[in-house]
Amino acid sequence: MKKAIVTKGIGGLYELLNKEGEHVTVQSRGRHKASGIFVGDWVKYSQENVIEEVLPRKNSLVRPPLANVEQQVLIFTLVSPPLHRELLEKMLLQGELENIENIIVLQKMDLIDEKLGQELAAEYELAGYKTFLISALEGLGLDGLKSQLKGKISVFAGPSGVGKSSILNALYSEYELETGELSEKIQRGRHTTRHTQLYGDWDRGLVADTPGFYLLDTPKVEPIDLAQHFPELRPALNRCKFTSCLHEGEPGCAVQELVDAKKISPARFEFYLSFLADMKEYKRGQYS
Ligand SMILES: Nc1nc2c(ncn2[C@@H]2O[C@H](COP(=O)(O)OP(=O)(O)OP(=O)(O)O)[C@@H](O)[C@H]2O)c(=O)[nH]1
Ligand SMILES: [Mg+2]
Ligand SMILES: [Zn+2]
Image (cartoon, rainbow, N blue to C red; front, side, top):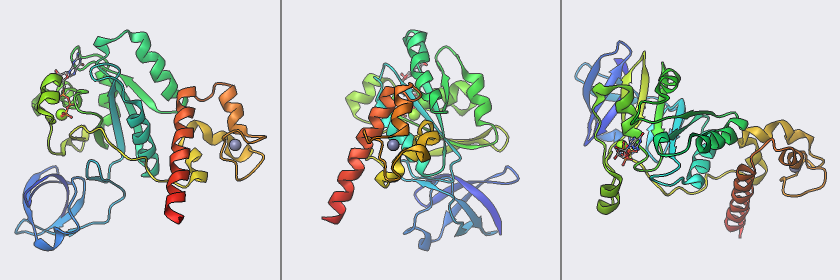
C-alpha cells in the first residue's frame, strides 16, 4: 500500500498527493465516513485506489476541518473588511494550543497608510510572531511569504473577503482560484471559496485555501495555563510571587512588570484578561 496526503475531498472522492509528487484520485470505504477524513490527513491506499487506513493526526483544526498543519497563516485586513482583532487573537490562541506555528499577514496594504500596518505588526512581533505586510493587488511583500511557505504544510485562514485566495493567485498565477467582490459576498451572504483544498507541491510547500469565517468560541484552556499561550508573557511566568498568580493585579506579579515596561502590547494584554474571564466563567459553568 502507498502513503499519501489528502489534498481535497468532495462527496466520497478524494484527491491525494503521494511522496513521489503524483496526484491520485481515490475513494473511501464506508467505514471511514463516520470518523471523517480531513484534508491534510495521511492515508494508505490500495492498488484499486481505495483508502484503507487513515493515519493518526499530529493535530487537527475543526473550523475549517484540516489535519496535520504545521503553520497557520492568519490573514487579516485593517480595512475592507475592518480588522476583526478578537477573531485574530482567538485564532492565535488556537494555534498555540494545537502546536501550530502562527504567522500573521496584514493584507490589502495598498488601502492604508503603511505606518498603521507597521504599528500593528510591531505589537505582534513583540509576541514573536512573524508578520508580513502584503498587497496581493500590487504584488507587495510576496517574496517573504513565499519563502515562509516553502516545504511546509500551511493553512490560509481569516475572514471572508480579506483576499486569501487572491494572495495564492498572486504567489502562483497557475492556481487560478476564484475570488469575489466584498459587496457581492455580503449581499449573497456567502463565501467565494467553499471547500478547503491544499495547493502546491512538496518543494514550494502545501497551502490550504479555506472559506472565510467570523464566529469562533474562545478556545478552552485552564485559566492558570492561559498565560503560557501568550508567548511574550512566558519569560515572566515563574517569577510571580504566587504560583497561583493569574496576573490580574495580584501583588508581586512579574507579568504586571512586563505590562508596565511595555513588553506586551496593551491591546494584547486586554485580550489576555478578557479570555481569562471567559475561561473562569466556562469553568464555573462546568462545575455548577
Ligand atoms: N485593494 C485590494 N483588494 C484586494 C487585494 N487582494 C484581494 N482584493 C480584493 O478583495 C476581494 C476578496 O478577495 P478574495 O481573494 O476572494 O478573498 P477571500 O479571503 O479568498 O474570501 P473567501 O474565499 O470568501 O473567504 C476581491 O474583490 C479582491 O479583488 C489587495 O491586495 N488589495
Ligand atoms: Mg477565497
Ligand atoms: Zn502574575
